[in-house]
Length: 235
Picture 1 (cartoon, helix red, strand yellow):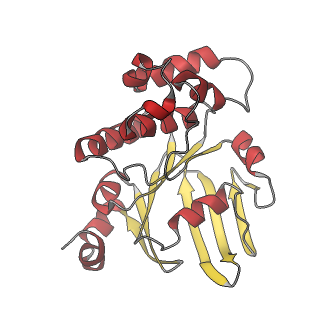
Picture 2: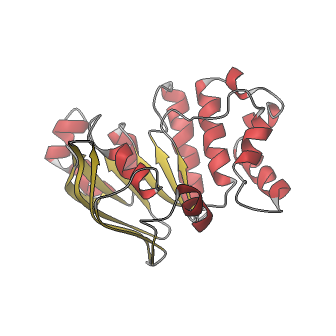
Picture 3: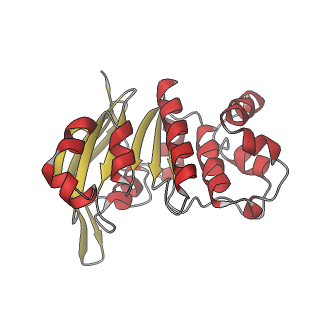
């Protein structure tokens, strides 16, 4: 499999706080790679650094073989990385369809076809396409955030805590969609506190603790790891 993302020796600081400590990870084309760990471990900071919202003091981030470490975030989106942020961050005063159209801001033409694809994946959004996004339920807002990211035609989709705050039935639904996107060929980097669900869909996984990668392996290997079971799976 061809490597699509390579993060090497990244260190990120919030003032004097060393948030990310020499982190290295890779994502191959067509994989679901998940990053699990406790709240505050540095998972979201890692995604924000990849997407250009934060800067690393050291190391390199390469996407499709080219360094993106100095690019502004909108240029990184143009290269093919889309992030679904923690807390969804949809445009609450806009309609569902306007939110989706905003996801295609880096592209010209072909938006109608992409809308059809998103509405086919998320029929609930089609039913509510003229509704103001702020009136949607939490699960519907998560679907909208994922649909908006898909509108940019990402080569890599990064999902930050997609199950946060959702009822168990909606968590199942979100992960079913993640599997479907994977089956259709979308490469996914998933940050998720629900370690059991994350490992169940992951080809490979990394465990983060206090800003460092402490374990890595296939999703199945880490699901069977005594260390992971004890810390994250209630075993």
